[in-house]
Image 1: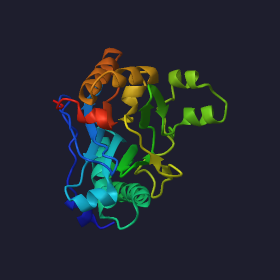
Image 2 (image 1 turned 60 degrees about the horizontal axis):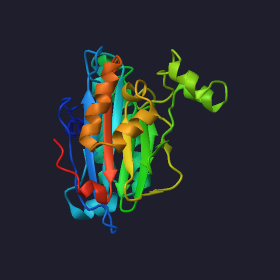
Image 3 (image 1 turned 90 degrees about the horizontal axis):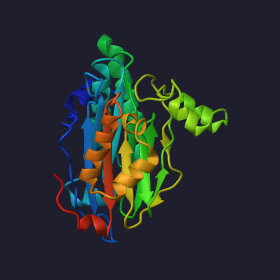
Image 4 (image 1 turned 135 degrees about the vertical axis):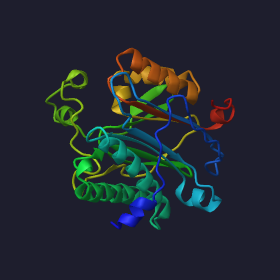
Length: 288
């Protein structure tokens, strides 16, 4: 990849824990609107926040119709500075590649993650202090009446629909691979000492396998998507996420979820984003 392209990318700054972003726009011919809030916290034990989030609404109506709204959470790894660099660079590169691509949205999103992986790998190979850097990435696109997703690593995407929570992503981790093979229960996996050892990340290798959905996911009024890093779901159970998100505005729920994770030790950076879709979102008060 041309190094000039990397240098020209606009950096994505990990927000201060008290900041949030709100988007409120027509999403489709069905009149869907969304209310979204994303927050990131350093936690109780880390010196650097290596997480990063992105929420992008194109300003041009034509681009919004062609590519929709992009949201992602990235959790960097690779040392004091490298993980921070990896997550921010991946977010910026994915945003740029996705919206600049002439490909259809699903293909463009997958290609953007592959391109970000190669960019990180090439940068790390040229700068010794960045060697070994990598990042997870879980990305969500809301486009017209459907959702699309692409993922590498163990950051997660949930859907809350009709008061039920569904895991819409798969952890690329050693313990979850054992769960899929039937060698370990999901309950045991939550407590396993190696639960955060991941099998895939953007950056460490020149190529990576990107997980995507087989087809676009139809949206319904009232759907709520939750994107988060493992610093949240390691300490807050799925049912607790559903209960908090289901009874709060997106901004309030982000605050509450981070507070619960910190109360339980906050052993990692904590990032969470909530996207509420439909008529209910249009009646919510402005986010802080």
